[in-house]
Length: 375
Image 1 (cartoon, rainbow, N blue to C red):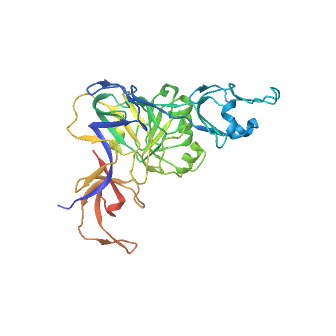
Image 2: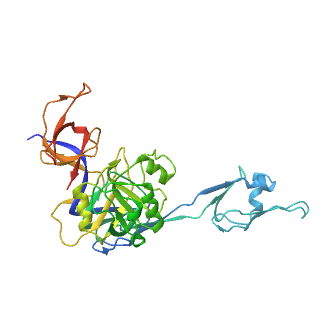
């Protein structure tokens, strides 16, 4: 039987998720193997060293670099507060003394007798890693983080902005092909994850932000609407650090595209459930997809998903989404995988597959133009 491998999106009603929660630098892990954790529990934390503030203090004091250490009133390693007197010159015959008062809080890290420069290290930045999903710790990586096992409904999107958020599922659109407009968003959705249908407008996102929603999820968005929300064109290869207050995820693509029926029905069946979302997206090497994770009860069907890039097995019957024009966003099942390269309309040759749509139409598209909707 013909088959191939292609990247895919995970859309699963119930799966076992192995979620890796790691610190960016070495730190302290607060849990042990076998511990049960909730989504917002802190499982590990560290302190990132603060910014460095170099200062040519000898020049400011009017002394030579070699004489600076004799003027210092603080020792290396000592804590400095804003307004503290750092140094005082000896003056001439006890007169004309000059002092320097710190404009920065931190720790005095070094004093150079060669350059006359001192270095203040600013406040450390605390970093906390939360569990993200309720589950059980199955692995502890000392000073790094943990792996959590959880039974979840797991849905990956195409693109998102904003970081990790938490809240209850709210259904704003009654059908998958209805656009998400501002009047469908109500104050009762505060702190929740709003599920739309087709294209979401920037007015709808602004309304979601104003009511304090954690996230908005819908089928598509127009590029101009995204620009209106951010205030600039998004030209980076990775997202997730945007500070708009609400995470935004699209499940299908850019434009007026309805949410896939299967995805919409999954959300519909989990209205009122607590969920975790992350809009972080990486579209180049090391693909990372935005995601919605909804905890479930009971055992999964046996499949295990390790968060990270997904590789899928492409064969007849596999559900796929077309990701290039002129059929962008259309969903169907693989009908066949012809083994020989086919001449395309452009005149080039490529390996193709036949996709059977829900209405019975069969399309021939290059294999590189589809991605698996993994279940």
